[in-house]
Image (cartoon, rainbow, N blue to C red; front, top):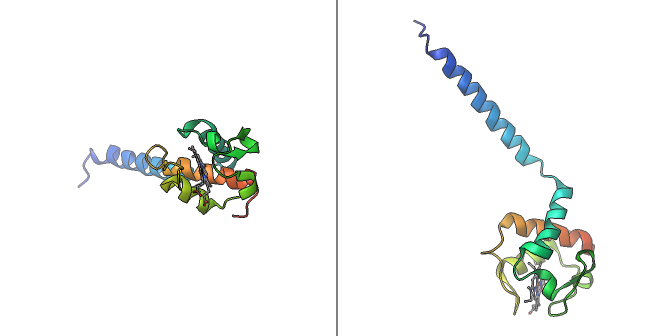
Length: 118
Ligand code: HEC
């Protein structure tokens, strides 16, 4: 026996499946150039206190001398993530004020502009 009500349900299901697959597709292709730009914004503006206060990084136009010169240090992605997440010495931890997405964008940016090998 066919029930008339069953057809619209199927259509709703199809639309839902389509919407879910589209959003999954969007997530699996991050825009790399966009992330670098975003990382710079985190470095110069979103992190509080700003990384520029304490660190020199020429691409960001910063010349802080409280922490190591990042152009010279060329930290790895892991070094940046660890330092920013947990803090080092007098450097504060940012894990409560920045999302892991922001911290990763930051690490990608610093590695990119300071020329470290990943
Ligand atoms: C209040 C000043 C200050 C701020 C703000 C600051 N740092 Fe630091 N940072 C330091 C100091 C000082 C050190 C060295 C700590 C030590 O070795 O004892 C350091 C160390 C580091 C290191 C090297 C870690 C290692 O493995 O030795 C990296 C990378 C770094 N900072 C990145 C950042 C980034 C990115 C930001 C912004 C989210 C930031 N810092 C904000 C002061 C600061």
